[in-house]
Image (cartoon, rainbow, N blue to C red):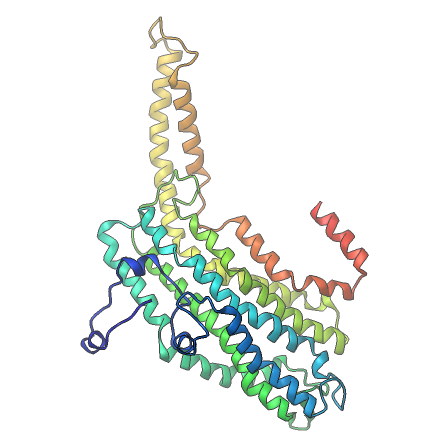
Length: 410
Protein backbone atom coordinates (compact mmCIF):
# COMPACT_ATOMS: atom_id res chain seq x y z
CA UNK A 1 0.00 0.00 0.00
CA UNK A 2 1.21 3.48 -0.84
CA UNK A 3 2.43 5.43 2.18
CA UNK A 4 3.87 8.93 2.01
CA UNK A 5 5.71 10.21 5.03
CA UNK A 6 4.78 13.58 6.61
CA UNK A 7 8.28 14.82 5.85
CA UNK A 8 7.80 14.09 2.15
CA UNK A 9 4.45 15.84 2.11
CA UNK A 10 5.86 18.85 3.93
CA UNK A 11 8.76 19.09 1.52
CA UNK A 12 6.51 18.62 -1.48
CA UNK A 13 8.59 15.67 -2.69
CA UNK A 14 7.11 13.34 -5.26
CA UNK A 15 6.58 9.76 -4.24
CA UNK A 16 8.10 7.16 -6.56
CA UNK A 17 6.72 3.61 -6.24
CA UNK A 18 9.16 0.84 -5.50
CA UNK A 19 9.09 -2.62 -7.06
CA UNK A 20 6.41 -3.84 -4.61
CA UNK A 21 4.00 -1.05 -5.55
CA UNK A 22 4.63 -1.67 -9.25
CA UNK A 23 3.70 -5.32 -8.77
CA UNK A 24 0.82 -4.82 -6.32
CA UNK A 25 -1.30 -2.13 -7.94
CA UNK A 26 -4.75 -1.77 -6.35
CA UNK A 27 -7.62 0.63 -6.89
CA UNK A 28 -9.37 -0.60 -3.74
CA UNK A 29 -6.82 -1.00 -0.94
CA UNK A 30 -6.67 2.65 0.07
CA UNK A 31 -8.65 5.68 1.09
CA UNK A 32 -10.09 6.94 4.40
CA UNK A 33 -12.93 4.39 4.56
CA UNK A 34 -10.54 1.53 3.86
CA UNK A 35 -8.26 2.72 6.67
CA UNK A 36 -11.23 3.06 9.02
CA UNK A 37 -12.37 -0.49 8.30
CA UNK A 38 -8.84 -1.76 8.94
CA UNK A 39 -8.76 -0.03 12.33
CA UNK A 40 -12.13 -1.61 13.10
CA UNK A 41 -10.62 -5.00 12.16
CA UNK A 42 -13.33 -5.70 9.59
CA UNK A 43 -10.96 -5.42 6.63
CA UNK A 44 -7.45 -6.66 6.07
CA UNK A 45 -4.68 -5.48 3.81
CA UNK A 46 -5.99 -7.80 1.09
CA UNK A 47 -9.70 -7.07 1.76
CA UNK A 48 -10.16 -10.63 2.96
CA UNK A 49 -12.92 -9.93 5.56
CA UNK A 50 -15.70 -9.47 3.04
CA UNK A 51 -18.35 -11.34 5.04
CA UNK A 52 -17.85 -9.10 8.05
CA UNK A 53 -18.15 -5.98 5.89
CA UNK A 54 -21.38 -7.22 4.32
CA UNK A 55 -22.82 -8.09 7.73
CA UNK A 56 -22.00 -4.66 9.15
CA UNK A 57 -23.44 -2.95 6.07
CA UNK A 58 -26.72 -4.87 6.41
CA UNK A 59 -26.90 -4.14 10.14
CA UNK A 60 -26.67 -0.42 9.36
CA UNK A 61 -28.69 -0.01 6.17
CA UNK A 62 -31.34 -2.76 6.24
CA UNK A 63 -31.99 -4.01 9.77
CA UNK A 64 -32.98 -0.57 11.16
CA UNK A 65 -35.48 -0.20 8.32
CA UNK A 66 -37.06 -3.53 9.22
CA UNK A 67 -37.19 -2.70 12.94
CA UNK A 68 -38.56 0.83 12.46
CA UNK A 69 -41.14 -0.26 9.90
CA UNK A 70 -42.37 -2.92 12.33
CA UNK A 71 -42.65 -0.32 15.12
CA UNK A 72 -44.56 2.04 12.83
CA UNK A 73 -46.80 -0.71 11.53
CA UNK A 74 -45.57 -0.35 7.96
CA UNK A 75 -43.68 -3.64 7.63
CA UNK A 76 -46.45 -5.74 6.06
CA UNK A 77 -49.60 -3.65 6.27
CA UNK A 78 -50.84 -0.39 7.73
CA UNK A 79 -51.67 2.66 5.65
CA UNK A 80 -48.86 2.10 3.19
CA UNK A 81 -49.89 0.86 -0.22
CA UNK A 82 -46.39 -0.65 -0.46
CA UNK A 83 -45.30 -2.13 2.90
CA UNK A 84 -41.60 -2.51 3.63
CA UNK A 85 -41.51 -6.29 3.21
CA UNK A 86 -43.14 -5.96 -0.24
CA UNK A 87 -40.81 -3.26 -1.55
CA UNK A 88 -38.69 -5.28 -3.97
CA UNK A 89 -36.57 -2.30 -4.95
CA UNK A 90 -35.36 -1.68 -1.39
CA UNK A 91 -34.57 -5.33 -0.71
CA UNK A 92 -32.79 -5.85 -4.04
CA UNK A 93 -30.77 -2.68 -3.52
CA UNK A 94 -29.64 -3.46 0.03
CA UNK A 95 -29.63 -7.28 0.14
CA UNK A 96 -28.23 -7.94 -3.33
CA UNK A 97 -26.70 -4.88 -4.99
CA UNK A 98 -24.90 -3.54 -1.90
CA UNK A 99 -23.21 -6.88 -1.05
CA UNK A 100 -22.20 -7.16 -4.71
CA UNK A 101 -20.53 -3.75 -4.55
CA UNK A 102 -18.53 -4.99 -1.57
CA UNK A 103 -17.67 -8.33 -3.19
CA UNK A 104 -16.55 -6.45 -6.31
CA UNK A 105 -13.84 -4.77 -4.23
CA UNK A 106 -12.21 -8.10 -3.44
CA UNK A 107 -12.56 -9.42 -6.99
CA UNK A 108 -11.15 -6.28 -8.61
CA UNK A 109 -8.33 -6.10 -6.06
CA UNK A 110 -7.27 -9.69 -6.74
CA UNK A 111 -7.54 -9.46 -10.52
CA UNK A 112 -6.10 -5.99 -11.02
CA UNK A 113 -3.26 -6.08 -8.54
CA UNK A 114 -0.98 -7.75 -11.09
CA UNK A 115 -1.86 -5.53 -14.04
CA UNK A 116 1.16 -3.27 -13.57
CA UNK A 117 3.44 -6.29 -13.50
CA UNK A 118 2.05 -7.30 -16.90
CA UNK A 119 3.15 -4.01 -18.42
CA UNK A 120 6.64 -4.68 -17.10
CA UNK A 121 6.85 -8.44 -17.65
CA UNK A 122 5.83 -8.01 -21.29
CA UNK A 123 8.46 -5.29 -21.74
CA UNK A 124 5.82 -2.86 -22.94
CA UNK A 125 7.40 0.03 -21.00
CA UNK A 126 10.78 1.16 -22.33
CA UNK A 127 13.43 1.45 -19.66
CA UNK A 128 13.80 5.19 -20.26
CA UNK A 129 10.07 5.65 -19.65
CA UNK A 130 10.01 3.92 -16.25
CA UNK A 131 10.04 7.26 -14.34
CA UNK A 132 6.89 8.36 -16.20
CA UNK A 133 5.31 4.98 -15.51
CA UNK A 134 6.15 5.31 -11.81
CA UNK A 135 4.69 8.80 -11.79
CA UNK A 136 1.41 7.44 -13.22
CA UNK A 137 1.24 4.86 -10.42
CA UNK A 138 2.00 7.46 -7.75
CA UNK A 139 -0.66 9.79 -9.14
CA UNK A 140 -3.25 7.01 -9.10
CA UNK A 141 -2.39 6.14 -5.50
CA UNK A 142 -2.68 9.77 -4.41
CA UNK A 143 -6.17 10.02 -5.86
CA UNK A 144 -7.14 6.66 -4.36
CA UNK A 145 -6.01 7.76 -0.90
CA UNK A 146 -7.51 11.25 -1.10
CA UNK A 147 -9.56 12.34 1.91
CA UNK A 148 -10.95 15.30 0.00
CA UNK A 149 -12.29 13.03 -2.74
CA UNK A 150 -14.35 10.93 -0.34
CA UNK A 151 -15.63 14.03 1.44
CA UNK A 152 -16.78 15.44 -1.90
CA UNK A 153 -18.47 12.13 -2.72
CA UNK A 154 -20.43 12.35 0.53
CA UNK A 155 -21.44 15.92 -0.31
CA UNK A 156 -22.62 14.87 -3.76
CA UNK A 157 -24.63 12.02 -2.25
CA UNK A 158 -26.58 14.29 0.10
CA UNK A 159 -26.90 17.34 -2.12
CA UNK A 160 -27.63 15.64 -5.43
CA UNK A 161 -28.34 11.97 -4.78
CA UNK A 162 -30.85 12.28 -1.93
CA UNK A 163 -32.36 15.75 -2.19
CA UNK A 164 -32.70 15.77 -5.98
CA UNK A 165 -32.30 12.49 -7.87
CA UNK A 166 -34.02 10.16 -5.42
CA UNK A 167 -36.89 12.47 -4.44
CA UNK A 168 -37.83 13.54 -7.97
CA UNK A 169 -36.79 10.66 -10.22
CA UNK A 170 -36.65 7.41 -8.24
CA UNK A 171 -39.03 7.49 -5.26
CA UNK A 172 -42.58 6.22 -5.75
CA UNK A 173 -44.21 9.56 -4.96
CA UNK A 174 -47.57 8.69 -6.48
CA UNK A 175 -48.57 6.17 -3.84
CA UNK A 176 -48.32 5.65 -0.08
CA UNK A 177 -45.22 3.66 0.72
CA UNK A 178 -43.56 2.42 3.89
CA UNK A 179 -41.10 5.32 4.16
CA UNK A 180 -43.42 8.22 3.32
CA UNK A 181 -46.95 9.38 2.66
CA UNK A 182 -47.80 11.68 -0.28
CA UNK A 183 -48.66 15.23 0.76
CA UNK A 184 -49.34 18.55 -0.94
CA UNK A 185 -45.71 19.58 -0.54
CA UNK A 186 -44.41 16.20 -1.71
CA UNK A 187 -43.27 13.18 0.25
CA UNK A 188 -43.74 13.32 4.01
CA UNK A 189 -41.14 11.00 5.49
CA UNK A 190 -41.89 8.72 8.41
CA UNK A 191 -39.29 7.86 11.06
CA UNK A 192 -38.34 4.87 8.94
CA UNK A 193 -38.18 7.17 5.95
CA UNK A 194 -35.73 9.50 7.65
CA UNK A 195 -33.34 6.61 8.30
CA UNK A 196 -33.85 5.38 4.74
CA UNK A 197 -33.30 8.79 3.13
CA UNK A 198 -30.42 10.03 5.26
CA UNK A 199 -28.56 6.87 6.33
CA UNK A 200 -29.31 3.78 4.26
CA UNK A 201 -29.68 5.38 0.84
CA UNK A 202 -26.63 7.70 1.20
CA UNK A 203 -24.42 4.77 2.23
CA UNK A 204 -25.49 2.83 -0.83
CA UNK A 205 -25.05 5.81 -3.13
CA UNK A 206 -21.64 6.55 -1.64
CA UNK A 207 -20.50 2.98 -2.31
CA UNK A 208 -21.73 3.28 -5.89
CA UNK A 209 -20.18 6.69 -6.54
CA UNK A 210 -16.90 5.53 -5.02
CA UNK A 211 -16.82 2.79 -7.66
CA UNK A 212 -17.27 5.38 -10.39
CA UNK A 213 -14.44 7.40 -8.85
CA UNK A 214 -12.19 4.34 -8.79
CA UNK A 215 -12.90 3.64 -12.45
CA UNK A 216 -12.06 7.27 -13.17
CA UNK A 217 -8.69 6.70 -11.45
CA UNK A 218 -8.19 3.54 -13.51
CA UNK A 219 -9.05 5.37 -16.75
CA UNK A 220 -6.71 8.22 -15.85
CA UNK A 221 -3.89 5.77 -15.09
CA UNK A 222 -4.38 4.05 -18.46
CA UNK A 223 -4.42 7.43 -20.18
CA UNK A 224 -1.07 8.33 -18.60
CA UNK A 225 0.35 4.96 -19.67
CA UNK A 226 -0.97 5.48 -23.20
CA UNK A 227 1.07 8.72 -23.40
CA UNK A 228 4.22 6.59 -23.14
CA UNK A 229 5.62 5.19 -26.38
CA UNK A 230 4.93 1.51 -25.71
CA UNK A 231 6.89 -1.40 -27.16
CA UNK A 232 3.93 -2.82 -29.08
CA UNK A 233 4.53 -5.88 -31.28
CA UNK A 234 2.20 -5.94 -34.30
CA UNK A 235 2.60 -9.72 -34.72
CA UNK A 236 1.68 -10.54 -31.13
CA UNK A 237 -0.88 -13.39 -31.19
CA UNK A 238 -3.33 -11.48 -28.98
CA UNK A 239 -3.79 -9.11 -31.96
CA UNK A 240 -3.48 -6.01 -29.79
CA UNK A 241 0.29 -5.68 -29.74
CA UNK A 242 0.65 -7.42 -26.36
CA UNK A 243 -2.10 -5.52 -24.51
CA UNK A 244 -4.53 -8.44 -24.58
CA UNK A 245 -4.27 -8.92 -20.81
CA UNK A 246 -6.27 -5.71 -20.32
CA UNK A 247 -9.44 -7.28 -21.76
CA UNK A 248 -9.32 -10.01 -19.11
CA UNK A 249 -9.52 -7.39 -16.37
CA UNK A 250 -13.04 -6.48 -17.52
CA UNK A 251 -14.33 -9.79 -16.14
CA UNK A 252 -13.35 -8.61 -12.66
CA UNK A 253 -16.11 -6.01 -12.95
CA UNK A 254 -18.81 -8.68 -13.39
CA UNK A 255 -20.13 -8.21 -9.80
CA UNK A 256 -20.40 -4.48 -10.49
CA UNK A 257 -22.35 -5.25 -13.67
CA UNK A 258 -24.72 -7.58 -11.79
CA UNK A 259 -25.23 -4.87 -9.16
CA UNK A 260 -26.27 -2.39 -11.86
CA UNK A 261 -28.66 -4.91 -13.34
CA UNK A 262 -30.10 -5.64 -9.90
CA UNK A 263 -30.65 -1.93 -9.19
CA UNK A 264 -32.49 -1.51 -12.48
CA UNK A 265 -34.47 -4.72 -11.93
CA UNK A 266 -35.59 -3.49 -8.50
CA UNK A 267 -36.72 -0.13 -9.86
CA UNK A 268 -38.60 -1.78 -12.75
CA UNK A 269 -40.24 -4.43 -10.55
CA UNK A 270 -41.80 -1.83 -8.25
CA UNK A 271 -43.25 0.02 -11.20
CA UNK A 272 -44.58 -3.18 -12.74
CA UNK A 273 -46.27 -4.40 -9.56
CA UNK A 274 -47.48 -1.09 -8.11
CA UNK A 275 -47.81 1.34 -11.01
CA UNK A 276 -49.20 -1.07 -13.66
CA UNK A 277 -46.18 -0.65 -15.92
CA UNK A 278 -44.90 -3.37 -18.25
CA UNK A 279 -41.36 -4.59 -18.90
CA UNK A 280 -41.30 -3.36 -22.55
CA UNK A 281 -41.90 0.16 -21.22
CA UNK A 282 -38.32 0.13 -19.90
CA UNK A 283 -36.48 -0.96 -23.04
CA UNK A 284 -34.81 2.44 -23.36
CA UNK A 285 -33.70 2.44 -19.70
CA UNK A 286 -32.25 -1.06 -20.02
CA UNK A 287 -30.37 -0.12 -23.21
CA UNK A 288 -29.03 3.09 -21.64
CA UNK A 289 -27.77 1.33 -18.50
CA UNK A 290 -26.19 -1.42 -20.59
CA UNK A 291 -24.45 1.09 -22.84
CA UNK A 292 -23.33 3.11 -19.81
CA UNK A 293 -21.84 0.02 -18.20
CA UNK A 294 -19.97 -1.02 -21.34
CA UNK A 295 -18.54 2.48 -21.70
CA UNK A 296 -17.67 2.57 -18.01
CA UNK A 297 -15.69 -0.68 -18.00
CA UNK A 298 -14.40 -0.97 -21.57
CA UNK A 299 -14.23 2.70 -22.55
CA UNK A 300 -10.90 3.37 -20.76
CA UNK A 301 -9.16 0.88 -23.06
CA UNK A 302 -9.82 3.14 -26.05
CA UNK A 303 -6.97 5.42 -24.93
CA UNK A 304 -4.59 2.92 -26.53
CA UNK A 305 -6.33 3.16 -29.93
CA UNK A 306 -3.93 5.77 -31.42
CA UNK A 307 -0.83 3.74 -30.56
CA UNK A 308 -2.39 0.47 -31.70
CA UNK A 309 -3.54 2.03 -34.97
CA UNK A 310 -0.06 3.44 -35.52
CA UNK A 311 1.54 0.08 -34.71
CA UNK A 312 -0.82 -1.62 -37.15
CA UNK A 313 0.00 0.80 -39.97
CA UNK A 314 3.72 0.46 -39.28
CA UNK A 315 3.45 -3.33 -39.11
CA UNK A 316 1.53 -3.56 -42.38
CA UNK A 317 4.11 -1.38 -44.08
CA UNK A 318 7.15 -3.21 -42.68
CA UNK A 319 5.80 -6.73 -43.08
CA UNK A 320 4.39 -5.83 -46.48
CA UNK A 321 7.87 -4.76 -47.60
CA UNK A 322 9.40 -7.91 -46.10
CA UNK A 323 6.76 -10.09 -47.73
CA UNK A 324 7.26 -8.44 -51.12
CA UNK A 325 11.02 -9.04 -50.91
CA UNK A 326 10.56 -12.67 -49.86
CA UNK A 327 7.96 -13.62 -52.48
CA UNK A 328 10.06 -12.04 -55.23
CA UNK A 329 13.08 -14.12 -54.19
CA UNK A 330 10.80 -17.16 -53.85
CA UNK A 331 9.40 -16.52 -57.32
CA UNK A 332 12.84 -16.12 -58.86
CA UNK A 333 14.18 -19.20 -57.12
CA UNK A 334 11.36 -21.66 -57.73
CA UNK A 335 9.54 -20.34 -60.77
CA UNK A 336 12.28 -18.62 -62.77
CA UNK A 337 14.95 -21.30 -62.59
CA UNK A 338 16.95 -19.84 -59.75
CA UNK A 339 17.07 -23.03 -57.70
CA UNK A 340 19.90 -25.51 -58.11
CA UNK A 341 19.05 -28.50 -60.25
CA UNK A 342 19.52 -30.96 -57.40
CA UNK A 343 17.52 -28.91 -54.81
CA UNK A 344 14.21 -30.61 -54.01
CA UNK A 345 11.00 -28.61 -53.65
CA UNK A 346 9.32 -31.19 -51.43
CA UNK A 347 10.41 -30.60 -47.85
CA UNK A 348 12.07 -27.29 -48.62
CA UNK A 349 12.00 -24.86 -45.66
CA UNK A 350 11.18 -22.08 -48.14
CA UNK A 351 7.57 -23.30 -48.31
CA UNK A 352 7.16 -23.25 -44.53
CA UNK A 353 8.82 -19.84 -44.32
CA UNK A 354 6.38 -18.50 -46.90
CA UNK A 355 3.46 -19.86 -44.87
CA UNK A 356 4.86 -18.42 -41.63
CA UNK A 357 5.31 -15.02 -43.25
CA UNK A 358 1.72 -15.13 -44.55
CA UNK A 359 0.45 -15.97 -41.05
CA UNK A 360 2.43 -13.11 -39.52
CA UNK A 361 1.07 -10.68 -42.10
CA UNK A 362 -2.47 -11.93 -41.40
CA UNK A 363 -2.01 -11.31 -37.66
CA UNK A 364 -0.92 -7.73 -38.37
CA UNK A 365 -3.79 -7.27 -40.82
CA UNK A 366 -6.39 -8.41 -38.26
CA UNK A 367 -4.85 -6.43 -35.41
CA UNK A 368 -7.52 -4.60 -33.36
CA UNK A 369 -7.22 -0.94 -32.41
CA UNK A 370 -8.41 -1.49 -28.82
CA UNK A 371 -7.86 -4.31 -26.28
CA UNK A 372 -11.59 -5.08 -26.23
CA UNK A 373 -12.87 -8.56 -27.04
CA UNK A 374 -16.28 -9.89 -27.94
CA UNK A 375 -16.15 -12.21 -24.92
CA UNK A 376 -15.57 -9.25 -22.59
CA UNK A 377 -18.53 -7.35 -24.03
CA UNK A 378 -20.76 -10.43 -23.95
CA UNK A 379 -19.76 -11.25 -20.38
CA UNK A 380 -20.65 -7.77 -19.14
CA UNK A 381 -23.96 -7.82 -21.03
CA UNK A 382 -24.95 -11.19 -19.57
CA UNK A 383 -23.95 -10.12 -16.05
CA UNK A 384 -25.95 -6.91 -16.25
CA UNK A 385 -29.06 -8.47 -17.84
CA UNK A 386 -29.17 -11.56 -15.60
CA UNK A 387 -31.17 -9.86 -12.77
CA UNK A 388 -33.65 -8.44 -15.31
CA UNK A 389 -34.43 -11.75 -17.04
CA UNK A 390 -36.74 -13.00 -14.21
CA UNK A 391 -38.99 -9.98 -14.85
CA UNK A 392 -39.93 -11.57 -18.16
CA UNK A 393 -42.13 -13.85 -16.07
CA UNK A 394 -44.45 -10.87 -15.68
CA UNK A 395 -45.14 -11.16 -19.41
CA UNK A 396 -45.15 -14.93 -19.97
CA UNK A 397 -45.13 -18.22 -18.10
CA UNK A 398 -41.95 -19.93 -16.98
CA UNK A 399 -42.47 -22.63 -19.61
CA UNK A 400 -42.74 -20.08 -22.40
CA UNK A 401 -39.67 -18.23 -21.12
CA UNK A 402 -37.60 -21.45 -21.07
CA UNK A 403 -38.68 -22.28 -24.62
CA UNK A 404 -37.66 -18.84 -25.88
CA UNK A 405 -34.28 -19.06 -24.13
CA UNK A 406 -33.67 -22.53 -25.62
CA UNK A 407 -34.43 -21.19 -29.11
CA UNK A 408 -32.03 -18.29 -28.62
CA UNK A 409 -29.20 -20.39 -27.17
CA UNK A 410 -29.52 -23.48 -29.32
